[in-house]
Length: 399
Image 1 (cartoon, rainbow, N blue to C red):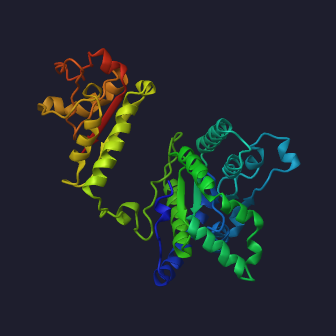
Image 2: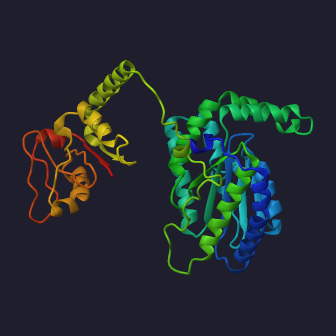
Image 3: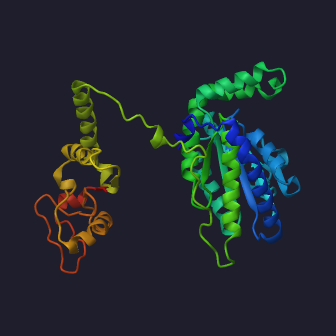
């Protein structure tokens, strides 16, 4: 979830200086359009690690936009009054009205993460809190609220450097507390818990935007552009019935640096190392595929990438570890069969529980004893082997 934020994102000063005036003007214009014509509120949720620039970014938004139409709330431990009400009561009171922007610090995502890291709640209780959050956000989205959630991230090394820099400067020393260092000591636990929460609560109606917080220019432009694009998209919609998802797709990184671009493809390994590693992981895969619990699961493995990049070889390494009764291999098909190849694999996964591995769209069904012929109607054949039916479905495709 945070891999993209771990990259060394940077925006040079000249580019930042050139971009900011245009972005500020656009944000002001879209804010006034929201006030005049908007029939929905904008809710911005700010969360993330300490020292990642959350407060600086919010202060900047107040500077770039009209603060008269922005409501900002910060939440810490609930007060005695708040404890007397349902958990979401204090957040409900802070929601912005239509035509305005609301910014929430430390909203409903923060407290469950802290409680789980310090083992104040169990794993099951944490899962219930996540489900509660998802229901709450779904309700807000159904009522027309535009939800934008920003998770500010730093690596462990970056956070330590950031906190040390702030603490050593007399002008910013007050910003670093003992609690910040206490949280830093549990960085790994915080990250693991945060990944679980953000993955499960990132939905089409309320997606998380992970912001790399190390570079000030990058994080400012990322947040500003995301807000601008989302509000513009919603304002451009014509009035209609309830829309399930009106959040625009996530914008690409402002510096065009992605995980794939930064991926190191040159990773040498000796033949002996490769052989030992391959035997180890194929053995684990073979055992897992025979586990009783696997009968209740289905697996779809999708292979994408450049031609001759090793997709076919990767599929062969997988099939070497599996029982042939648990998957079907690629076969040459007629034009009629090719049309139904991909959908047929999906049907078998849910109806017959027969496994398959496919290349492209050419998927075929097989069993331990016999390969079923395609029906004249083009429907996917069902597996006849009782052994294959009892096993789970596993589909891998490559384009």
